[in-house]
Length: 108
Image (tube, rainbow, N blue to C red):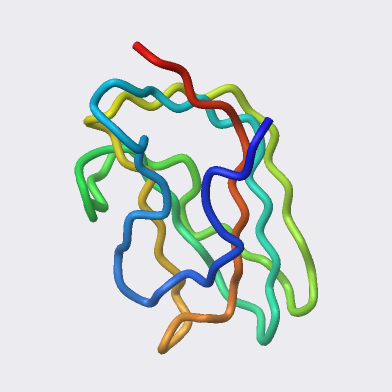
């Protein structure tokens, strides 16, 4: 098990929060940890093209996280080198929610 991304803050625009490190690697996400450090806000997380917020690719859509609260999501999500984990925070200016992504990476 290793840290795949973060700890870092979400932005208020779509950004890639995890991409497998090479075309010869695929990622296996096992745990996503989110912590709200300021005011109640929502986050959205997608799987798909770089920076994309395409309908039907949501893992979370407008997930509300209260002030000073955390949300942990345990999963088994395989991402190929062409797939991106994309996130966005609804708060103006972002930086209200931090994330940490844990899992494994394997050689294809």
